[in-house]
Amino acid sequence: MINIVGLGATDKMGLTLEAVNIINNGNKNYLRTEKHEAVDYFIENGIDYESFDYLYEELNSFEDVYNEIVRVLLEKSKEESINYFVPGNPLIAESTVVKILEKTEDINLVMGMSFIEPVLKAVKRDPSKGLKLLDGDEFNILDIDVHSDIIITQVYNKRIAVDLKLALSEIYGDEYFIYLITDAGLRSEEVNHIPIYRLDRVENINHQSAIYIPKSNEIINFKDIVELLYKNGDFNLSYKVKNNTSDSWEKVVLNFIEALSFIIEQEKEGLYYSYEILEEIYKKVEENADFSKLRVEKINNIGYNYNSLEEINNKKFIDELIDIDSDTLERTINVIDRVMSIGFIWNRVEDVLEKVTEELNELRVALANGDSQNILEETGDLIFTCLNLCRFLDLNVNEVLNSTVDKFVGRFSVMSELASQQNIDLTASNLEELDSLYNEAKSFQRSR
Image: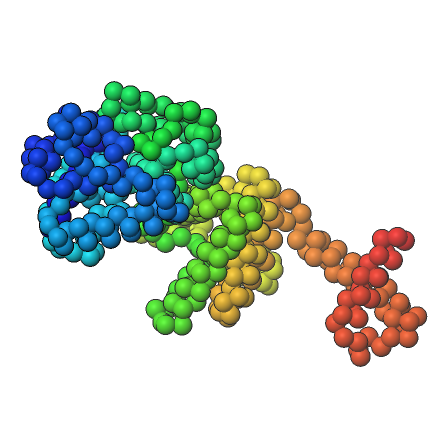
């Protein structure tokens, strides 16, 4: 049997009574490392032990060291019961213990105080609202949760400190304050409360160094976006699943994968970082939520709360909108002018141009999805918004369109003359040839 015993995170005063009893039970004692202050108890009481520190010098990797320690312990335990001592708590950040548990059940676990408690004491933080434990030697930036406190262990040299500084700066920013704690719980304890950019400038970094990152409520993560969507419900987004069919859901999944792939590609190229993109998505959802709220309020004000139309005297206004009867273009302009007259209008031309871009992008999505009804709706929205732009600029829509048509006809006339000069039959030409002629006519008109 193997007694696996935690030596605690401090010195001999942190040993539990159960640990002391096992130290003195007469079994052979094996230590993963003797670089621990609690080992003074063995020395002061003349208790023999063997350490595996020599393996760290002989073997090429930690994985090789841990595998060899486990092999030796399992072999020794076949002959007699033995004691195996590890720093801290055996079940926290102890690879050899995990490997032993995978290979045998003939063990006795004796808990010790982990390094987490002294670290919490050093930074005076309560972990009950969320705490995540990460390994600095096997750090993966995707494991970061900005809304939880985080402890990063195994920050045992400057190389790891540099790598962590660069990674954490991308998420939290250079100026975000963190803690670098060395020798937590010991008399030599050192606590540095520093901005991230100074992480690799601290001199005292050793095998008992750890980073503590307080949670941030300012940085946006994916969970925030989901919660905001739940809170605000449906928005005027460019793509919606109209029918719960396998085909429509497949499109959603494929579009989502495509969007994620784009985000990853942007991150790889160093153009954006994923948390920046999440923040932009969150802002867009907020904008949609605010727009939807304002739209509902505006609709109520102009009478779409039909039950109260008589009370607020807006029924006449809505009836007038409904009863506008003229050709399509004239009807559209009249509707726009009527709602503008009561203040339903953008404040800045930039806002209108942004809306034109938004509608154009939504049309692109509709075309990509091949939804004919959505294409019809988005095309109409784009045209309607462009007409809104004309009215915002106080332009006569008929004059604008007539001017454009006159210009187009004029260019096409020049194009026809150029085609005749080059002995080209317009009706027999392909699109590429026609486009080239049109651009030539455009240049000719400008130069003239």
